[in-house]
Amino acid sequence: MSREAKEKKNQCRRERNFREKRATKASLTPKSSPDDLPPGGIIHLSYDITWEPLEKDEPKVQALRDEFGDEQWSQLHSQLYDDPRKAVPVLEALLKRYPDVPSLYNWLGVAYQATGENAKAGALTRLNFERNPDYLFARVAMCEMLLRDGGVDEVTRILDKNFDLKFMYPCRNVFHITEVLGFEYLLVKYFLALGNTRQARIQLNFLEKIAPQHPVTKDARLLIARAFFKFPNFVSRWLK
Image (cartoon, rainbow, N blue to C red; front, side):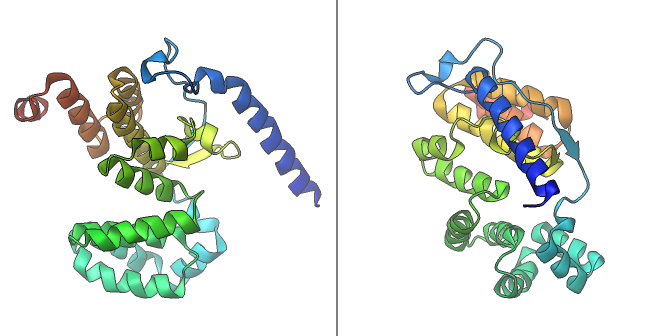
């Protein structure tokens, strides 16, 4: 083992030990109810948030981007929302050629959902999670699908009390803004499904700090308002 590999291994061990010492302050104990969280709520450990792509240094992703071209790659990403039907065949072809790139599963799943092909989107979500269980977006997509189907217990198992990105990925110090937003939004929905509106509001407060005007934050705000007031039409107008 190289010196660099040993140092990285030791760093991961140190961060894992730190996570274990702090875990009792950030998670539910097995016999606790959702309202038994400590008064301060879940603690967000320090990590950096970037708006720059994080996958560009991964060889397989970089090979795909080099072949496709940065401009075309950006256009394809835009098509997910502007013209998803046009993006579907392109992404299907790319996934056949690059089955080891997790983000392609995620993008194609988004395109399937946008075109109403929910069965295909669900199957792809499961496949991505089976093949790439450590890929954050695969976890988030799987948990969101389970929440829609009422599978709160299964989501609890997948999250495994890791309610902070640093707990889930102790060796990482930088996360992309979309990773943070997606994960925090999932936690808002998860805690609301548990009936723990207090903790859902804590997650919303974090979203408000990092991206107050982002659509994800606005959606989370609306979900919590609906949970409190039970008048969705009135609250929708009130929050505009």
